[in-house]
Amino acid sequence: MTGLAESPIWQAFRRNPGGMIGLALVVLIVLAALLANWISPYPAHAGPIGDFGAITAPPSAQYPLGTDTIGRDLLTRLLFAYRLSLEMAVVVLAITTPIGVVIGLLAGYLGPVWSYALMRLTDVFLSIPPLVLAMSIMGFLEPSAVHGMMAVTAMWWPWYARLTYNLTRAEKREGYVLAAETVGAGVPHILFREILPNCLPSIFTKMTIDVGFVILIASSLSFLGLGAQAPTPDLGSMVSEGAKYMPEAWWLTVFPALAILLVVVAFNLLGDGLREALDARR
Image 1 (tube, rainbow, N blue to C red):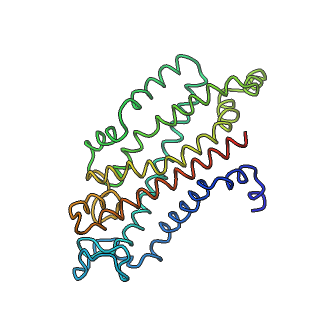
Image 2: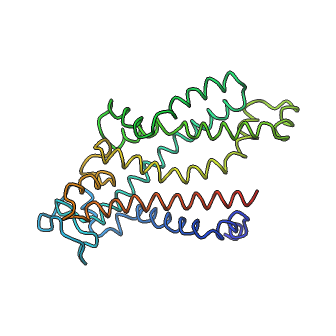
Image 3: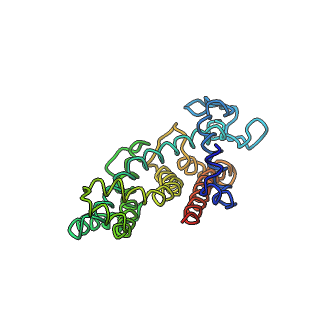
């Protein structure tokens, strides 16, 4: 803890009010998702159970955010929906980041043939709007949370390939890379022991910001009926279902939409604060 407190990156980060607010919100959201079984008012309401005596009840002391169309507590379902959304974001980024980074490293270092082949493939994916590409992939799959995760994974790696490609092209001209080449270091050593460590700060910053955007894309798929299916709590499907009952039961849409907004803003603030702290270190 003492080492962290004395870190120049942390010292720069803590001077950024937006970054600190983002960090606090992210910690709160992650803890709420992890502890949903224990802190949610009605854990059973995360499943197919309903309370027909409390159908579309407005916010009250008993139900702080109201209930849905079969009487399930909305606050409970939002907490469990956060858990699903964060799980999807972690899995998507854990798969796409290594793929994109390796492609970017190879394209940026190995010369024009590799660069042309790999980056033209990347450009093909980047030329298609992310949501449109994900929807196209989902057209061949049965709607589910797992398939939605696969669709988002298939369209997310090019962003990391492009970022790493640009970083690698800049780093390969640095003296430490030329020195490694002079002493006969192999390509894997130069890519993963010399160049990659210097790219990681930018990659980690993008990953932090992308958590919110992955959740937003996944929620968009669910809003269109292509993601998680009932009775699984999902932010996008909750907004879609609640929209049918606007404006009378406004809480069915407003609170899930605010939950999406909160998580996107939180991770963006955290990512921006982290980027500025890393830039200040340089």
